[in-house]
Length: 304
Image (cartoon, rainbow, N blue to C red; front, side, top):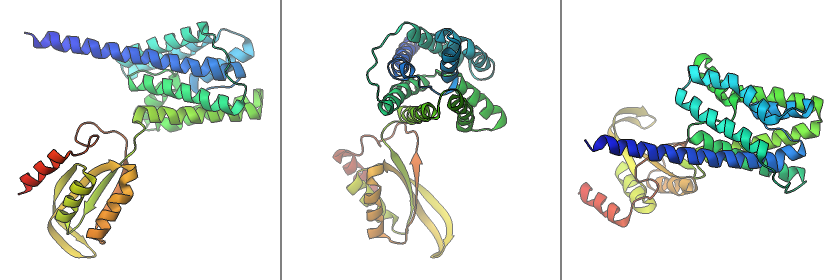
């Protein structure tokens, strides 16, 4: 009887924290726009960029235009993606429009390069935090998700084409210099958004196939103190002939340790087959805290 109220309470707490984070994301994005990009005539990408462009050309309320242009994309999200995402995105876009309308930050710098970099930095942080908590601040992202699901077009290509057209219009109406600085701000925004969503710590997945797998396992455990997963190899054929009853080692390490693990493998087995690839998301396991001395000792006991 007590499990359901506990689950409901935990869900409510989790949802509350998500909305607080979305509010933080909206605040950071609005700082990027009002303190850096908008006062200096720079454009953002996507729907926000269209709203800025229309505001400069027709002197209409930008917040109102942002809401009006976002309506078709929000309807698209409601019927084709997720009603939960629609509701969160509706709140985040309305909040951004309100912040933009009422905020009056003092202009920090007139240096165009600093405006592009720090405007993109704040905007990227805001967008990344918002997306990470299940909402979007720009309708072009919803369009990208829709076209990807129904036509297989990558989200990145949709947003790239969308913004290419927007910045081309900017270059014609305003100036090539403004368009170039706006593109720089957009690139900074995109990179910071990715870093915020994926994390600042880069990891590499490493798969190792070696006849000396026992020594490799021992070295990774003792020298790198990293966890690993071991698969049983059934049959393999390569330049060393047929291999049976071998083990495939899989581990994830920090990017700065890639040189160290390659050195360890080369010392044990120079002919080992090694595959490295980037890891976008990690959850659980012993990776982030690595193996303590006690855990390392426990592994040795289990081996025996």
